[in-house]
Length: 300
Length: 175
Image 1: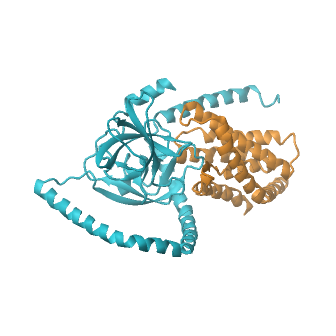
Image 2: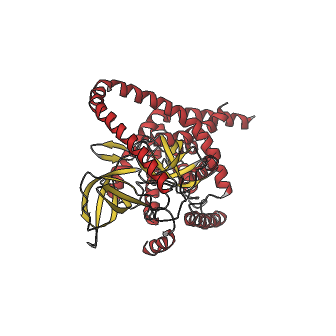
Image 3: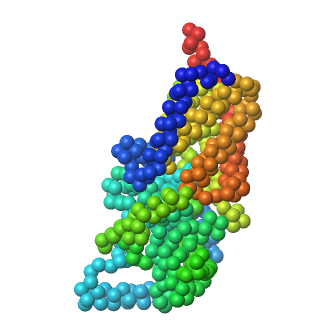
């Protein structure tokens, strides 16, 4: 193809390539902040996207309703059995909550790691190429969403907000392979056992809970929740259930595989939690982020 | 009318992609398969083959940029790959016959090319660690099947609309 590689085109191609590499490296460096033009594009596209996604969710909702209608009989039978337990449980929960409030008043402690203001949001898109585990929701800075807030469904924690624009925000799911993604977690059955959710096993589809003190015993089936000590996430959001316990690579601490309570595959309505107590840039956030990224940069 | 239709279809497909993305990954026998909808690039390749190369590349650049900014926050990835694929398609089509079946196969090959380029990019910058066999079995094959179904359903319609527009423009130029 002689006419394709004429001098002018060759130069244009080269300049284009250089520009491209510069653009990619520029945007790779600082991915947690959107510049003004980016924000505008995101908001405009997000607006269009929500117009398309709301009717779709309505239709899939109808299908879901039909499906659950078909299962009603079986479900009803099972639920009836559990209803009596539920009443008893509810009574004791109410009792405990009241007692907790009273005790708090006595010791004059208002703040609570558990308390959060929920913001309801709708998922308007999932990153269609799915190389990164990201979803985009229809609430943004205007609605009070900030970077690093915890995002959950009714089942449990699914991720955290990584980027906000005035009207949309991007949520990175727990199933990401980002090495800087950490959630401070706790197994609270009997004794409190702390650990960090670090990483996701792609093959097993399970989260990895690392840095558990080897003195403590962790058993299969125990529930893992957020500890609230990472500085950003509120306490007590369910993450999942332990499926296997081993020791880590160096044999110093224990490592547990955690099956996530929430499903990451089809998401529509999510809750963003705005913690009421002051946020600290701890292990959940970017405090140690800086030196970790330097290390990761050297490694890769 | 057809003129607006050419743009309207690309906007529609751009917005439909993430909605179909919400249904993926699908679970079969405890294995997860990722289906990536690539409707827009399929359409743009058809534009390049049947209508106008320059226009296809321009649309590719524009929608690629939107895609980059809105979804993946790496500017320059899709806005490079989309026009590149349109360019490759239009150069290849000079040497082969413009039959629907041929362009369908060409489009599928190019979509596989897009996936492969993205795999190379993401594994090389270390956002994702994935072996090629895993990618091949769990991403590439399901994606190709899903997009082939889409292409078989709508390929003829795209060809019909775009050729219509092409003839319309040719008539205008004659006058």
